[in-house]
Length: 451
Image (cartoon, rainbow, N blue to C red; front, side, top):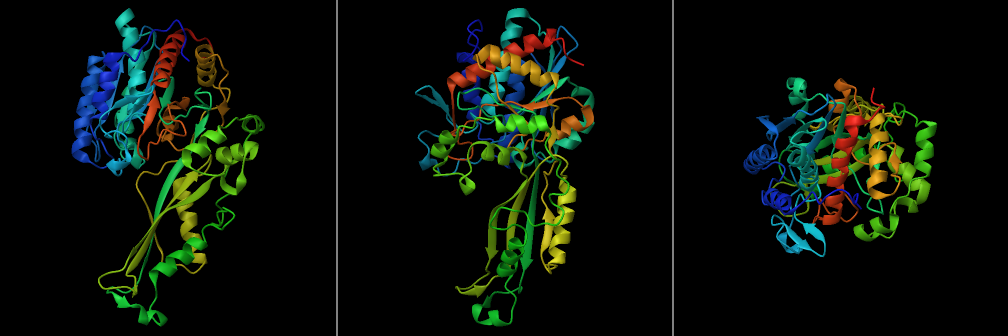
C-alpha cells in the first residue's frame, strides 16, 4: 500500500489519460497506429509540463521528454507504447482497446505493460509540479514503440541524442510484483537473441512418394533442433556455457532466500507444476542464473497440392535468454559452428533484428539502496532483491555508454495477461507505484550515497 501521507496521484484526470492511451491500438508493427499513439503521448507529456521532442526512426517514433529539476541530479525513465495483438476479441470480457474497471481492476491492452506504468510515473511528476511548480530532480522520459521487437532502432537514437539522455539512474519497464504486491528490485536484466533457422528442399511441390530419394527440409530442421537442446533442457551448443559469469556469493545468497508466488503463478497460468517439478530455491536459482534456448515456432511450407507432400521449406524461430558475459554475436557464431560440426551445413542461420546483451547493476549500488528504502517506507515491507531478472529489457543500451545503474520497475503480476486476453492491473497497484515514484523523486534530491 502507498504511504498514507501521499495523496491519490492517479486521479480521475490521469485515469482519463490512461483511457485515451488504451484507446490507441498501438499493436507492434502497425505503423499508422504507432505514429498516432506517439503523437498522443507527446501531447500528454506537454500537458504534464515537460519539454518534448519526437524522433522518427526506421520503425515507430521515439519520444524524448525533459524537465530540469531544483538540483543537478537526474532520473531517466524508459517506457514503451507498443502492445501485443489482442488476439480473438471473443476471449475478452471487455473490448481490448476500451479501458474498463471492474472489482478494483483496470482492463485493456497495454494497461499493465506499459501504458499503465507510464501513467503512474507521469502522475508522480505532474503532482509535484502542480504542488511545487518545480521538480526536486531533473527527469527525462524516453518512450519507444518497438520494444516488443527488441528495440532494434533504439541504439541509433541513443547515439544521436546522447546529450539529452544523461542521468544518475535509469528506471526501465518490465518489473514484477511479488505475492504481496510489493515490487521486486532487480540488479540486472537478461539479454535477448532471436534466430531463424531455415531448411530448404525441392523448389516445387512433390508427392511424398518421392521421400525415399528427396530430402525433406522439415526432418532436417527437426534433426538440427535436436542437436541444439536435449530433453533435460541442456543447451548442447559447444561453448555456450563457457562464457557465462559465475554468480557471486552475495547473489547466490539472495537467490536462496527469494520468495516466489508459486501458487499464484500456477493458478494464473493453468499449470500443475513447474518444469521438472522445481520449487523453492531450485526454482529461484534456475530463473535467476540459468541461460536458456526456447523454441518459439516452427513453420512448414508445403506448396500447392493435397497432402501428403514433401515440404518446400521449414523454418524455426528460437530465442536465447542471455545472462552476464554472454553476447548475441558470440552465441550466433557458436551456433553456426555447432551446426556445421554436426553436418547441418544446409541449415541457414539468420539473426533477427533486436538482439542485445544483458545489463547488470552492482548489488551495492546507491540506486538499489535508495529504492529499497522508499519501498520499505511506502509498503511497510523490505523488498526482495533479485540479482538477475527472469526477463529481458534493453537496459544495456543505456548502461554500456553511461555507466550508471539501471533498474526495471513495473506492475506485472502472474495474472496480468499482457500476451493474452483480459490484460489487467489492480487500480491500487497503479496508485501505489505512482506514490513510490513520487517518493523516490523527493528522496533522490537529498540522498547522500550517490557517487
